[in-house]
Length: 273
Ligand SMILES: Cc1cc2nc3c(=O)[nH]c(=O)nc-3n(C[C@H](O)[C@H](O)[C@H](O)COP(=O)(O)OP(=O)(O)OC[C@H]3O[C@@H](n4cnc5c(N)ncnc54)[C@H](O)[C@@H]3O)c2cc1C
Image 1: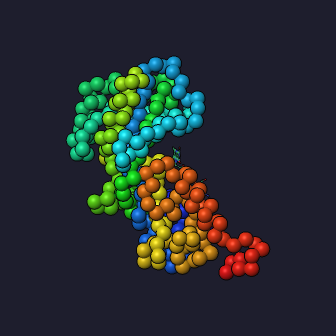
Image 2: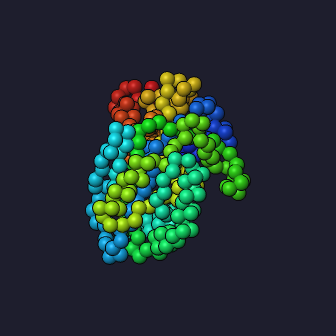
Image 3: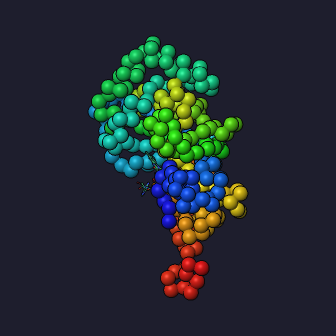
C-alpha cells in the first residue's frame, strides 16, 4: 500500500522503475497528469497589531464568486510565521513579465509595503489567507533525474505542459483579497513566487498515478492496483485523476476507503486472488 503523498509516492515509484529496476513494468504514464487546484493564494494582513484571528478551525468559511471558483479562508498557527517572507504587495497584470516588473516597482516605490509586512508583529495571528481554487484543468509533468539545484542528486523534476500551465495570476483572487482588505482594514498580499517568479503555488498537489483503462492510459486501475503489479495499491493524492477544484483531503480519504473496501476480507475464500 503506497500512500507517501504525491511527491513521496512518485519518487518511490520512479526509483523502483528507473534506478533499482525492481518494478520495471510501471507505466510510462507515471508522473504525467499531475495537477494543482488551479489555485492562487492571496492574503490580507490586518492593520491591528493586537488582533488574534488564530482561534477556531483552520477553515471556517468559503464561497463561490463564480461558477469556476471556490475560495476558502484560512487561519495560520504560530509555526506559519515564516510564510510572511513569501508575501508582498498585491499587483494585477495578466502578462507575467509585466506583473513581475510592476511588483518590483511597487516594492521600490513603497518599500514599507514589503518590509512593513515582513517586520509585522504577530503576523500569523493577523493574517487571513484566501485559497482561491478553480476546477479548470491544468497539467504538470514530473520526471526523475539529476539536477544542479539538487547538487546533482536524483529527485523529482517538474515541467509545465504546453497550453495547460497551472495559473500564476487569478484576477478573481486579487479582487477577493482587495475586497476583504477593504472591509476588514488591512493590506492585501500576493505570493511573491507567483507575482515576481511566475511560479504557480499550490497546497493541493494531485495526480501522477492517474487511473486508466490500461498501462497505456494510466498508472493504476479503478481498484487502485498498479498496472503490472496488482498487489501494489496507490491510495493517496497521487491517485486523484482530475482537478476537483476543492481542498482534497476528504476526496483522497474517500478514494482510499473505497479501494480498501474492494479488497476481500481475511475470511473470504478469494483473499489475494
Ligand atoms: C499548508 C497546507 C494546508 C492544507 N490545508 C488543507 C485543508 O484545509 N483541507 C484539505 O482538504 N486539504 C488541505 N491541504 C492538502 C492536504 O493536506 C493534502 O492534499 C493531503 O494531506 C494529501 O494526502 P496524501 O495522503 O496524498 O499525503 P500526505 O498527507 O502528505 O501523507 C503522506 C505521508 O507519507 C509520509 N511519507 C512520505 N514519504 C515517505 C517514505 N518514503 N516512507 C514513509 N513515509 C513517507 C509523509 O511523511 C506523510 O506522512 C493542505 C496542504 C498544505 C500543504
